[in-house]
Amino acid sequence: MRYQQGQTQRLRLTFSKGGEIKYISHLDLMRLWERALRRAKVPLVYSKGYNPRPRISIAFPLAVGITGDKELMDVFVEPPMAPLDFAKGVRRQLPQGVTLAEVDEVYLDLPPLQTQVRSAEYLATLENRQSVEEAEGRISSLLERDHVPRERRGKVYDLRPLIEELRPREENGDQYVLEMTLKAGEGGTGRPDEVLDELGLADRVKGITRRRLNFS
Image (spheres, rainbow, N blue to C red):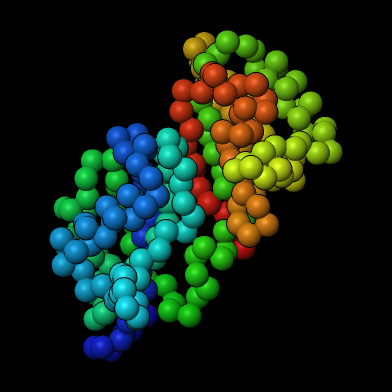
């Protein structure tokens, strides 16, 4: 893509959120990125109005305590800059626990990232206090149910339609991994911690990672 001086550019970042900062909130993560971009002297575009904010947006909030391998964020800049120069400058300002993997130009008129998320894939590492066969039995029982009522923030919802896939796989003698694909977006969002709680495995979790987001 070619841009002229004075035009706005939209850059899409792929980054990871590691274990060192997995307990910071989504708001704190946004503040972290804002500070890093300012320190790198990125020419950010700001919103209009009484309280202008940098036009940066993460595709989908990551829950506290969960790490992310391929998180996505859009940053609007003006004037345009080479993605390689952007990446070099910003990487020097990022704290331990955040790794910037890729920076790509995308079209300005693409829909917002947040509106395109359809599902998320997670890996939950669990203590091996049971066989994979037993885990498969619990999963089958859950998936055979027509409804799985749960309560979140005082409201009852159905967890079952938010679960797309659950697959256990053995890692070694001390732990195994449960792969989950859960719906995300306007129609409802499945949370891995609530799935694990419904399976009776919440007390065996050693860590949860969001492997990637799936888009429409």
